[in-house]
Length: 216
Image (tube, rainbow, N blue to C red; front, side):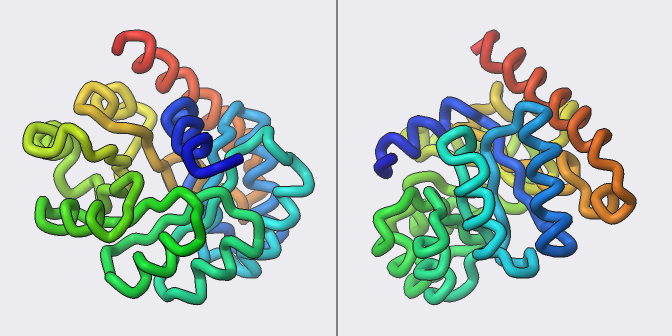
C-alpha cells in the first residue's frame, strides 16, 4: 500500500486507536480487543514497551485488515525504526524540523502534531500529509471549526479529548479523521483484564463514526 492509498484509507476509516500499552503482551491483547470491536486503524505509540516488535507481530497477524502506524515519534531514529517495523504511517506529537524531515524521508504517510495556526502551517510546509491537532481537548470541536475557516485545504486529525459522545461534533467541525486514546482503549482496563469492555467501547465508537459520516 503506497502513501496515497494509505491517506485514502485513513480518511475512509475515520478513527484511530492511539494505543499506549502497559506492556508488549497487553498491547497485543488491546489491539485484538479493538479489532474485535471493528476498530481497524491502529497507532502504536513509542511509549509502549517494545513498540516496534508489537508492530511487527500485528503486521503478521492482521496484514491489510488493519491500517497500522506508529506514533509519539520524538526523534529522527524513531522514523527509521517505524518504517523498518512495517508501519504505514508515522505520527509525532509536536512540530520540529529535523524530526519532520526524517518522517517525510520514510515515504510513509506523515502526521505532524500542532496546535496553533502558525504551527499548523509550519507542519504542513514541513511535509505533513495530515496535521494532528494536539491536544484536541484544549480547544474542542469549536476550535477545529475555527481553524477550518482559514485552512480548508489542510487535513486535520484531532487527538486527545476525543470521546464517544464528541465524535459527531468533531466530524461536523471538519475533522479528516479522529485519534482516540484513553477514551477508547484505557491502559487501566488492559491491566485489569477488561478486554471485553474495550471491545464494547470500540463498537460504540465505530457506530458513532458511521452515524456522523452518514450525515455529512
